[in-house]
Image (cartoon, rainbow, N blue to C red; front, top):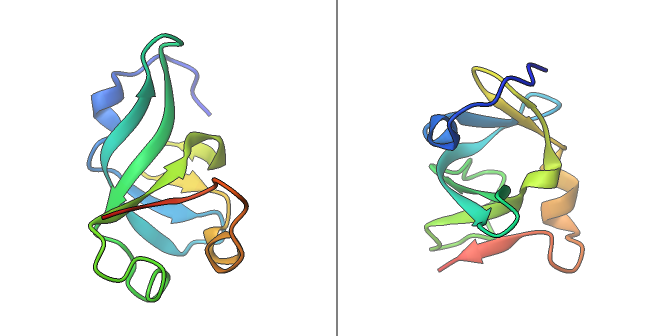
Length: 97
């Protein structure tokens, strides 16, 4: 992974895939910790409707924790979310109404 600093706005519009190649969604916005100057989450839209069929019904998108990100390049790779969506930990995922 390239550690060269990037403009955070360059993440917007990138497609997000799980590490096993399943399309998850597209980055629409970022959740930031302004004091810590860090990205804490990715707000995804254009969701894979099969992946989020029951969980995000009628929602505009989801926010996934940035700690799930494994690689950032032409696309963003995150931990496999299928299991997490089906059996989420406490605050792992947020549905945006």
